[in-house]
Image (cartoon, rainbow, N blue to C red; front, side, top):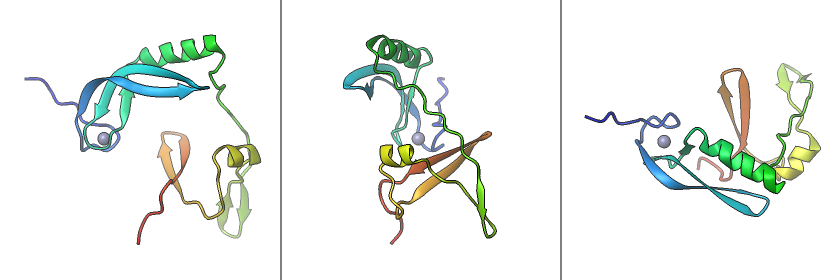
Length: 120
Ligand SMILES: [Zn+2]
């Protein structure tokens, strides 16, 4: 009996093989094979597939070099404050009323802009 893979993202859905994971860089569309969650729709390209996309995008000169910025944290009252660099603010179209989701992944902190307002 085949073991059903559970989505590592939502832990609810199962993963099904797909051949149409689309990513787009610089106006080029890349298609990868992988698995997609039946519940949350999260896509998990097979190992090697992503590297193929990166290699192809590099050859085309459209692979964005990963942006790594360094900032010091500061303190405002009892709260630690991280200032978002202006470049990033513009790129992500961040506004001061935006909600962000903060996720801890190992030793990394991922900040995601929430597209829709939650709650009431
Ligand atoms: Zn899922």
